[in-house]
Image (tube, rainbow, N blue to C red; front, side, top):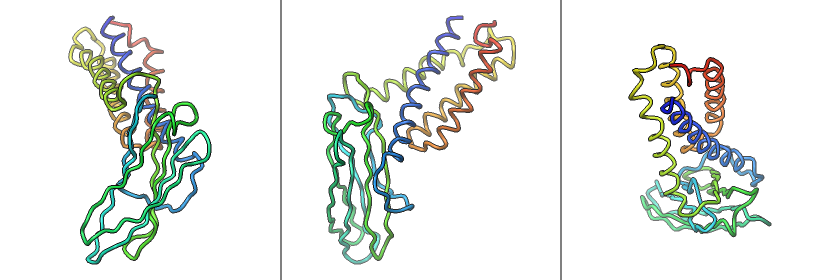
Length: 226
């Protein structure tokens, strides 16, 4: 019985984490940033989690794929409790050169809607590439420490609660019970991966499927039957 409740706690923790990350990205895409292009801009990296005391950076990596020097204009818009923070910059790139431009963020200056920081970076068109943009949402949790440490601690704790149940299933005589435990664990792993990659449409679909699976599981009392 205790193994089943620990497994259920691990699933719950994993769902809270994945749901928060997916929610942050969904809010970012509908936050109200100016729209520039349907083309996705590669190279934007943002923290997944932050804490109220933490300061971090939004980073955009750009590369000149051509054989001549390139002046590339980029810009960013970041949420604040008031008007959007907006900044543009021109990067001079030699052929094949890579550069990273970074913008500082903090919960104090950039948090909005209670628990989030949102950002959109964009690249102006050149003869080598069209206009492109990318968006990210950062979940701000009222906890001490650093967001990246908290993220991996949360993931490891989820795994530590789930894996023992999967390794010791001798007490589950019903093959259907074993299958449902494995499906829940596999689905949660997929959901966390999707959340970390910020694919919120896929994440919402997986979340709905998993919630249906949990309802069916609880309905048949597969967590409490021997």
